[in-house]
Length: 158
Ligand code: HEC
Ligand code: HEC
Ligand code: HEC
Ligand code: HEC
Ligand code: HEC
Picture 1 (tube, protein in one colour):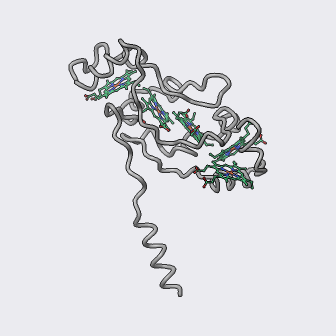
Picture 2 (cartoon, protein in one colour):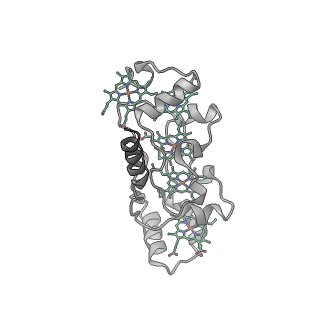
Picture 3 (tube, helix red, strand yellow):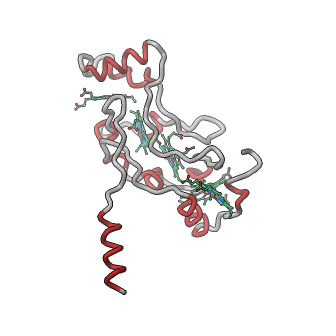
């Protein structure tokens, strides 16, 4: 029996986490955070605080007006900034619309971004390396004595 269990565990361990998506330009968190940028330079958590959001392309152009401007990737970025058309970033972490979630509520509890997204500053490509399925939300809520009532995450707002 134990061997069957061990084999199952080993097979599970051998399954690699999902690969990161191909993004419209190869933006690297690792490269950019090494320059001293902070998460909230780009992800601002506007009111009411549910989303972190993505930076405006004009933010990127503060540097890329000059930096690597001959790169085809940067030209794509520049065109998107000029036309005021957001880059079509492929979403990595996403929960269904019938689940209520607030970034601000969790950040105010003192949780670091890495708790739910892994060591982003070390990544060239963001992939879903932390699972945020219902059971994972529940486990942390239980651990921190936060509510696990169905209505807490699935409420009238849906
Ligand atoms: C220079 C701007 C910039 C900075 C600084 C930055 N990010 Fe990002 N972030 C982006 C862009 C652009 C994307 C979309 C492309 C991608 O997924 O790599 C993104 C995507 C993400 C995603 C994936 C979101 C999803 O579900 O698709 C996470 C998570 C994230 N960032 C976390 C962080 C954290 C944590 C930090 C600080 C350690 C940080 N970011 C700093 C620009 C930035
Ligand atoms: C603080 C200045 C700064 C900001 C802000 C910035 N970048 Fe960069 N970016 C750089 C520098 C410097 C490099 C070159 C790094 C290297 O190659 O060593 C770079 C490289 C890149 C590259 C690789 C280009 C190539 O062809 O090699 C991409 C793509 C990129 N940045 C996208 C973005 C995006 C998207 C944003 C906004 C979310 C952004 N950058 C914001 C400074 C910046
Ligand atoms: C308690 C877990 C948790 C923490 C802590 C957390 N996130 Fe998230 N993040 C999520 C979930 C869940 C989603 C998907 C939300 C959705 O689809 O509505 C997400 C989505 C995102 C996105 C995609 C855009 C958006 O707003 O939906 C970005 C960017 C992001 N997070 C960045 C960050 C940054 C930066 C921090 C730290 C300041 C952070 N997150 C902290 C759970 C978390
Ligand atoms: C790292 C631990 C942790 C994770 C992971 C986590 N939560 Fe929470 N969550 C908390 C704590 C602690 C609170 C604060 C509870 C309180 O105020 O009593 C909270 C609060 C909330 C709230 C109340 C927000 C408000 O506006 O007051 C909702 C809704 C919620 N979480 C949903 C989720 C969902 C959905 C997920 C999974 C995608 C999730 N949480 C993952 C720890 C976590
Ligand atoms: C802490 C937050 C949280 C609580 C509490 C919670 N859920 Fe969920 N629930 C989620 C998240 C997140 C998802 C989406 C998971 C995904 O798509 O990966 C979800 C998905 C679901 C789904 C859809 C399942 C599917 O496979 O698509 C149902 C049904 C559901 N929840 C019922 C409940 C019931 C019943 C309760 C009370 C016993 C409950 N939930 C409590 C966060 C929560």
